Amino acid sequence: MALERHHKLLIGLGVAAAILLGKLFVIQILDDKYKTDAANNSMVYDVIYPTRGIIYDRNGEIIVGNKVAYDIIVSPREVKPFDTLALAKALNVDPDIIRSKMEYYRKYRSRIGYQAQTLLKQVSPEDYMKFAEIQYKFPGFKGQMRTIRDYPINAGGNLLGYVSEVDQAFLKKHEGEYRSGDYAGKTGIEAARENDLRGVKGYHVYLRDSHNQIQTSYNNGELDKEAIPGKDIVTTIDAHLQEYGQQLMKNKVGSVVAIEPKTGEILAMVSSPGIDVSQLADIGQHYADILKDPYKPMFNRTVMASYPPGSVFKLVNGLIGLQEGVLSPSDRYPCSRGFPYGNGHKLGCHGHASPLALLDAIATSCNGYFCYVFRNILENKKYSSIQESFDKWREYVLSFGFGQKLGSDFPSELGGNIPTSNFYNKRYGRKGWKFQTIISLSIGQGEIGVTPLQIANMCATVANRGYYIVPHIIKDSEGVKIDDIYHQRHYTMVDTTHFQKAVQGMYMAVNGGGAAGGTAFSARVEGLDICGKTGTAQNPRGADNSVFICFAPKDDPKIAVAAYVENAGFGATWASPIASLMIEKYLKGEISSPARKDVEKRVMDGNLMSRVKKD
Image (cartoon, rainbow, N blue to C red; front, top):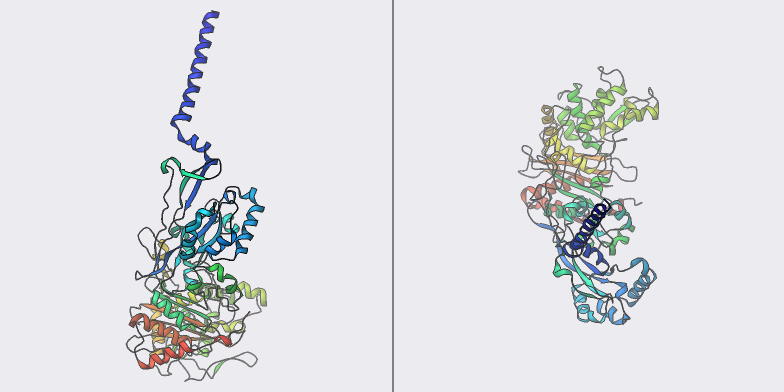
């Protein structure tokens, strides 16, 4: 019995030993993973940065490409005593820059360990070649090729955005996705499509000897990983229209936004003054100066500025009045240079024929007329209180895309403001306000705040006779699909049948044909059937803002434009010619007639910067 137990014990020990030996055989002979892990201290990963995706305009022109640049990398633990002056001369830098950085690396040597550090960024090819010839004299230093952005066309720095090295806040927000020394899109299209454009890093794996010198590729490159280039992006932008808009807005503060109404595709998006593309490739060099600029070129007015829309908003009130049944196109209201209300007050207006019906009121931009319209909306007897009628009015306004983010694929979009009845209840008391209290909303003033993108979207909505597609800047392309929301129609709460009246009034404003004339004759271009609406928005910080919206052709519109120029006065003076020139350039390809060339020259030569109050 004892002998049998002894045999069993020996057999058990033999099986255990066999299993253990088999496991060791797998670990040491068959499975390379454990050898790789054990060798990690002697392995060096040389990162291969992917080529960032190219950005194209709607016509296939490259608006952001790539060019080669070189960084100088140093592994502090591998550095031996070297000639600082010789290295500085080869790299064309001040020797003190090298001394300062090497002192920093020595101070934090334990923290840095064997990590490579970027000594210099974007060294010119000429300087890199000088360095490469003598690199053998400087152990621990090497060049690393990377691509940087190139801009063949000046298609708007604020629109395109910039790429820069990630900081600690970015690394924390994107933990595990990036590491120190990586680059990422920070603004504009570069930020909006970072995941598509960035690509995937690769690496070469090398072995390091006991003296920390790189000897050879690890395992004949078996563990090397190729970098995967970023995806190319096709935008909705017309690069040459964008560039033309920037020329028109030179020395002016404001925005121009152009949209293709049927698709919601943004054709141009100009924020002025903006960042020039020449500053984008090396934004770090210019960043401090850009931030100091009192005109705030980093601030993208197209989606971030909140302005009173002024008289272009009269179209919305007129359409709401038609839908609510409190306005008929034939209704005529008087205007004696304004609308009198309570205690001798008067909301002023310019001189024109009186009384007017709807189409002439739109064409001449009559303030008095739309005060009557707004009063009728708020005092509509089918509602039990002004709060109820106001809340209904606000619903209509929101359906035009105001008071909320439109949901564009462009980053940093803000929603503006459409006040609520609760806002006025808190300010004046529940029974302390009425139509006269908020009369300025009749003409797009008061507490209303909208972005230029929202104004352009409203123009596209009228052009489409009642619907819009969320404005966007990226098109479907190979490997890149846009969200379905950028193909869906959003209808307003106003019946589509009413929009033809607004369209006809806008046509008369530019081309005449009514009894009272129009305010936008300067926007007329033979053969284009431009429909437009002027606006002059009051500005507490100085001269009035000049506003104009227009689309063309009248039937089957191809482009809708909103121009907003700060402190520029009447809408017809500056915004109207800018917007109409954009349409003419897009539809005709040129500014052809002598008269229109004169308009173009006046706009391009105009300098309004001195009118703007800087923060």
